[in-house]
Length: 74
Image 1 (cartoon, rainbow, N blue to C red):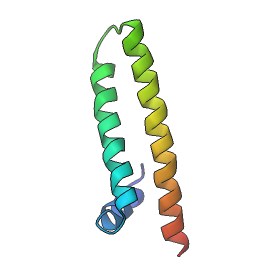
Image 2: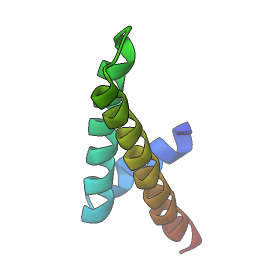
Image 3: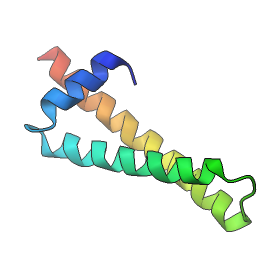
């Protein structure tokens, strides 16, 4: 995410519970993905979980972008 987006997120988190929830999930998914990505080999189940996390993180990012877009248009 761009620095301007991160600044806006930090500013809006105290006011927007949905944004805070999505941002917390985004950070959690990012941390879990980092753990998977540090490993040299993944089992089939781990690879499936990693792909699921990537999709969840992307969906959440899309929702965050939608919220930010709404605030920018106000």
